[in-house]
Length: 304
Image (cartoon, rainbow, N blue to C red; front, side, top):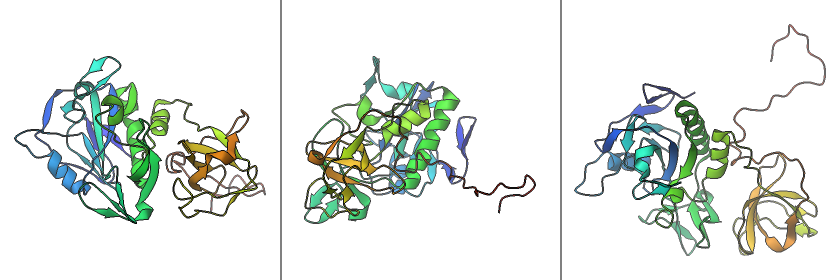
């Protein structure tokens, strides 16, 4: 479990490395998530801790793909992570926000059957998701975040919002719209923000399959392989990423199945109470479900 002491993060797999790139005292109002768009967490930490002739940058935390966290600045010191930015009439979010960089390559290019980052590194298809950014630009491949990164991001957001009374949880894409696109559609920002801020508006809309059978695929067209057996008529899916002709959905229930379906064969379900979607399962499932026997237990018997 993570905690904060004297504006420093305390907990498992947390280290501190001081960066010279910082401003004066910070009284944070917001939390801003970024992706590093770099080769590794180590290379990003090195860059953020280096003084350069121009373009110095920093962040409060760097979150690695295996869940390790490196803190570069105490949370009461200004980091240089936001750049030219504004939100709700406030210009220059460095002076009002805590910045977290998550190790992730960001938007990828598809070259034949390969997925390549801007710096030339190739990624396996299992580490890629297809989505359209919320600001548009069409469906494209993005480097997927790991489950442990999403778990830690949620834990950090909840902790920082509670400790500092933060007003909102944002992405770089929100405060520098048109200039930045991180953390991008592969990161469940809206759901993490809702959980951290205690909102209840993060439940995706429910849709119903209208075809007798409907393939659910790895990407947004019929050339992609199915990820599971075809969905049957009446199957309920949660709309995760709407797009023009195909949408990313999650099958409601215990299957954890996510994929893309053709919009022609799903319709909006009638309004009804329904369970909230998992944030890549890792977010919504913070603790395992307890199972109990149908037989009444003796009060003196402990768990096996």
